[in-house]
Length: 162
Length: 162
Image 1 (cartoon, helix red, strand yellow):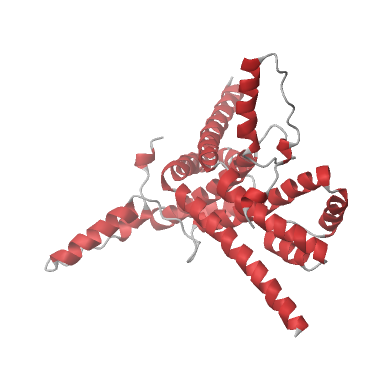
Image 2 (cartoon, helix red, strand yellow; image 1 turned 60 degrees about the horizontal axis):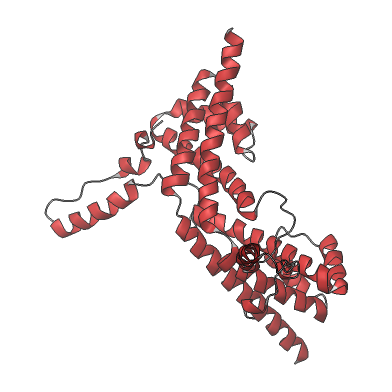
């Protein structure tokens, strides 16, 4: 189960450069080496998996910002808290930008809440969210789940055989 | 729109320590300072926003691994590629672990595919996914969308007024 045994498809598309152009050959080799180190991920067009994940996180940060602002209002501005709760019942948070755009246009008081949410999601993304922790947790999760899946399968098969 | 104007709720829950225990007071102040730097995010129980995001990414990595393996098989093992495509039509990839567990139990050949997917999702998460790029893209996205939302609102209002 060594990752080095994986064969990236991009290796197969390597075309050797013409030998009479040494500068071009060097440049090609340089770029080909970079490409070959990573596995080819199809189906993302001009975007990247990182861009897709960032888009999901962007909506997640809006969801977090709404929760943060809502909790803050609960302790010092009950009226605004009730207004935000009522708005949340009528509007989905799946599309964070649409939610904020709609909130801005609801009333001047809602607009202030929306601006606060924009401010909080930016501050949360840049200062509070623990990016290193995310990487650590995701790496641990993949190890733990892979081990569990294989262990469960082996246990199941050995029970069936006995 | 300075993030320093945000008032974390945790500041309000600060209880001054008893003055007769100076060591304890120092320790409390130290931890309180750390807590106050971050905004209180309610509703995650014992988990954290980072753990929730990692769980989503975990399923995303399984989805990516399936695409990688599928593309690799397409170029050198047409039979296995057809089998994986057929399995994908019948099973959802929303829950990555369940997908892999089901794939393992389909047939011995499917089991080999499942083990390959587990291997690839681990390698992708640890080596290929660009974590720094994710952070950069998400930060840029929040800035761009915040600016766009406010600009659109201002333009809309100024049109209505004119």
